[in-house]
Length: 515
Image (cartoon, rainbow, N blue to C red; front, side, top):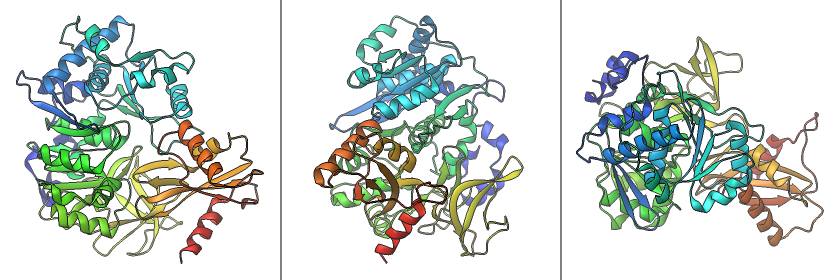
């Protein structure tokens, strides 16, 4: 099986679609993610499935048996409440027993799970709820009143009372989903105000995901895995939760307000050997200044979301003594460039995105569609569906065929691993009565890679109070991480001939300031 191989050469020789299917119980006709990730590993041994490090210092340990039984009971509860295959069930929960019970229970019935970020404000939540139109929105008591403000939405509080209610049902449920049935609607963290449809994943997506698991995060049976990213986003859900569980690997995650010292304590206490995180998690561990207080067992590390700065790479080398392996992809296309963690015949080049996942073709192209020369920056393209498709990123390759990232091709901002939309933040700012015009860009930041900077046209007198008011106004409506950390008040904004805000001019002006 593919899990028996660890080298880059073996990946090129043996990785193929047929080999991936050998890792699963289901087949090309009938497959269910909950069965593959939880049900088939529940054997009465109470083997640990998930370790949760809570921000208050608590550790929560959940077994495959516990999650499987709870998921089955919740599936029966959904049947009793008239939920049918294809109905959307939205979840706005931190990692916890109720989260996993509801997530996998919905998948068992053939309903579509829609994970939502717990820090969404009312505007950010309504935008997604209006789009996916869930039959149920499941959240905690703290968020319930806000969720009920969205008309026509049935809100269920996932607490001990819910777990007590579903205990009356049986702890077995037989899924009947087909491999091509929809299982998950995944919103990207950079969704714009002109909300596109969520990325739709079928149950068979768990199979193709294994390329990223095997070669992007290097997961193998026997690993003690950890991913601190929220399961509301693609990295935390697919790479941090579903992929390891599908291989029967114990995974770990973080719940609550992130704290780098708490993370390092969990890595040490749990004996974690393999971690996949956002670049900012590593930066924050470095900035905490206390890594030397812990003893780590790390053997493999991967990261995603943005490049890691040289100082943080030096910290990783000194602290963990293993290379930090980038993996690159998006919610829409999946992971396509990896650094093969754990492969002793693959040289990891600092700052590189690595090389393609086995079987994929990627190319950096000029505007005329011809491939670039080594070192020449162009647009990163993926061969899919018998044609080249853009990733909306710029990149270059080196003489050895390694890929390097050279920035976004659109107006998406990546800050501390979060992908944010300039348009979405602008539209939120424009709701403020004192904002006449607004433009948003990303500017370099040593800690977060980029931060959001807003340019505001207003008749109101600028000042610190006004700045804090606009920041709070935005984060309350979108999400706690989606707000302009920097605000500049201007008399007018640069415009294109068509009258649109010219963000490129603003970016060029900011770049000129630091030269």
